[in-house]
Amino acid sequence: MTISYTVYDWPSVKPSRQLFYAGGAAIDGGFTSGGARMMFPEPGGRGVLNLEFDYQQNHDPDPLVSWLCTMIGNGNIFRIPILQSPQLVSLNDLGLSGTAGAGVPWNNEQPWDNSQNWADEVFAVSSENVLEGSLYVHVEFGVLPLVLRHGHLIGHDDVTYLVEDIEYNGTVATIKVNPPLRNDIPQGDMITFRPKMLAVAKDAQSFRGIYQINDLIKLGSAEFIEAII
Amino acid sequence: MSVFYQRLDEYYTQGAREIRAVVRRCWHFAFVGYDVRMFDGQGKLFTEDGNEWLGYVDADKRKLLTSPRMSDGRDGTAPTYEFTLSLVDLPGQSAFEVYTALKADQSLVHNQPLTCWLALLQVNEGLRPNTPLEFFKELTMQSTRFTESVVMEGNSLHKRYTVTLIAKDGNLGRSNVPNGTYSSTVQKERARQLGVAPDKGCDFVLGLADRTFQIP
Image (cartoon, rainbow over the protein chains, first blue to last red):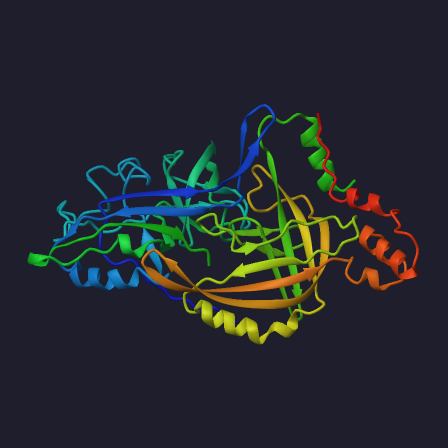
């Protein structure tokens, strides 16, 4: 039995609040004779993305919102880009001034008419072969300033990882990631600072809103769990 | 001592004050033509021997495979071990399709081995332990049981599909062999068949099973 699946790219429906975290699990281990409660860490873990939405207006996204309200159920897999927040290295940090918010504006400093900028891509290169399931990635920064810090998110092959620990040795950083690597990362592969995530919505009902007058619809929140393919 | 127990021993004797390693059970189901390997965790486990083990704990920390507690068999009994797998809807394949396909393949189960291994996962190893797996117990799969049920979840009715595997350990059939078993019940029954007084010679056997030692 082979399983075939489709991955949908997340449409241009912007969340107003978001958070990515790598959820692990702890197992209750009972009490010791001294009365201490033992919680045992679970090996592995899953990435979780929490998104919250507001009113969507009568712009282009409207029919897409209707499509999303259906597609978000049934365990469909979405490729969701992580939007600009303190979780991502900002262009300002990298020395590119004059960019407020996410992305790169036109050369007259203006965004598109939906008030979004061009999407940007920032990446460094893996300096060593590492295998799926391990916790460490080695990244060569080259000419990039060493701006990656604890709590930033990096991505590889549509998987988002949290920088749990990072140590710089010259221009090479050793990063401890959470969750463990989902793919082999050969030397020379791109590690992006604008990660995307393959995820499945956990509770579709809390996302859906209802169309009101003036083409308004208020969407709710969605919790997306990393899809391990 | 194997590397597994050596490492556990080191942790214990060092008087570790925080959890630096966890042990997880790994199950190898050797169906005819299909090897299924699962482990008690989230994600995929990669072991030294080159195998991949699928974690059966889902994102809600629910175990999709329920596995029974292993007995060490020293009391001579052959308990029935039942393993139940809950089938979930996958994109592109409904639980019903998987259920029907598995039902059609049930002949691949009988008399095949089911091995339980222990994996030692140390901190900073992620899902690639470099301790070789420790053999724990081997069972022989006997048969399957397929169940469909309808449950109420919130406001809606859902159909649940589960597959149960029944396995027995090496004590199966022992009482059929002359002198093959030494449980108290069997000994007393033999005495009764031979017409002699009840034989309490095997009463001590029950106390042998699953001894727990408390380290003071």
